Image (spheres, rainbow, N blue to C red):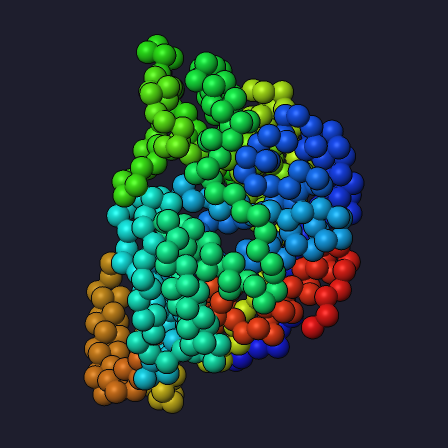
Length: 459
């Protein structure tokens, strides 16, 4: 079968963007242009003269479904007279050191090969706390499974190398990603999560966290527990000792990030504090953005953020839009379906007990007669035991005489089982977007723009 070739992108945008544009403008007039938000936007280099539409993702090699958020951000900003902005959660530890690509070995088998970009970082170290690097060669050991992979890897390597002099790996990767998106998007003002703690609104919230840690963390945990599919952990609490885990990381160059506790936060410099996910998006949607675009994962956990900020601070956050997409590479594959594998395994097992599967009708008739004798004989009787022995001897002789043919059934089932993983590779939607060809990404941009604001984009 041929998978991926000729398929149009599948795009999801929810809820109706038209309704959110009005909510975004109202939010800007009421909050974004006011005295509470303006100093934070100015400090972070964000526009203050119009609404801000924000999206973002970690500093890693993300797939077209994530790229769709950036296309939607740009399209909505243009059609709503707003400004796009990006957030890079550089406090996260990310697998940027390798990128998986589809390759085809000498046997013709498909597999996903991790192509090394740089040396693996120490576990737990945020990408912002790692130095910029010279990229490796980034050449797969086996031929790519489609023609766009090799040129895409070469573009990635050149983009990474161009940003070698950035102060850390997060900014290097963010710069490379902006270059790789540049055929379709201009780079938007970019906020890094490790800079957020120094913004005016963040300082105010951090003071509230330190002074109100018991209540803040209890309400945080309540919000997480009340949110289905939040996929984020609760905070540890020790009210008896007055000690509470805060939704913050302490980040230092070259070191793993560590959790921050209420009894130590006052002694940690602000430039070593970075918000965890819920606090980060809460700050962004409170003071930095008038509309925030999430993917499906962020959509789920940010419902907990909304509950927490409403219960703890009495604040309503900027509206959010969910955008995702599916684009597949044109990978040719003869991979079996799960049903074909199950059928082959069943045939191999069935043939060991049914000579008729190999055309031995007389032997099959003898086997069936013995089975009937067994069924008809009393349990634990000598006649039943004798029939069992005869059946055992008959099938043993059959299996010895047809060893080669039965092995072929087993080999086919085994081969199909081994190739089942190829179907996942051929259908995968999460390959890094730079290894897709320009036509596929252009089609994605057009589909997203039409879904987000009914605005067609010329090919």
